[in-house]
Figure 1 (cartoon, rainbow, N blue to C red):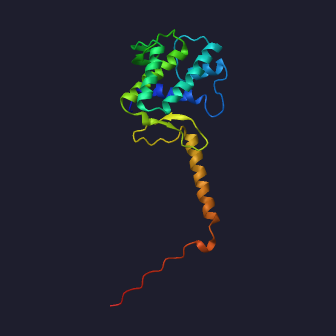
Figure 2 (figure 1 turned 60 degrees about the vertical axis):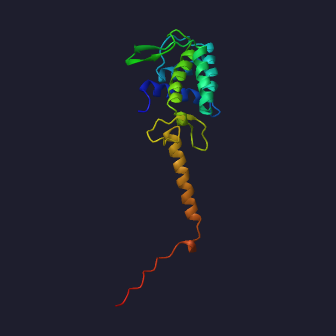
Figure 3 (figure 1 turned 30 degrees about the vertical axis):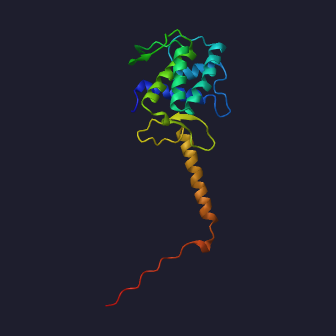
Length: 199
């Protein structure tokens, strides 16, 4: 694990949030879908469960998405802006089975502010450890989802196993089709054995 556990969770949650608005399909169409997203990612604190809360979270997505395209100085500037706008004040907290970790907003802050600050604090770790190159866009040709490569050897290319499998199957089928299309006389003959030396 390269980052602290809560940092990795926050980074993956930020990527998941960005991805709810990518690919041409709105995955947070209503407050109920936001409820499901918040539950899936373990968001605690007060909620209003209304359209204003949903709009605030949806407006956060493009700001977070910019981090995947920024250089270090621009990313640091955006992180500072996110923290400043939400009046972030880091404090150690312990709740819901989690040991001590950092929160920088009160539990009654708007959900969008809490999401922005959690993401900003996680990205602050990414920036200060010079790991921005771990922010990736899926390598599948038909996917533009973002992810954070948290593998030890920085080898993760796809946002999900589904995209990885689909790409690998397509590459296999392309190779098979190329073999089938090869003329029969193009197949290599059996290699000749070298003549034996006589003494």
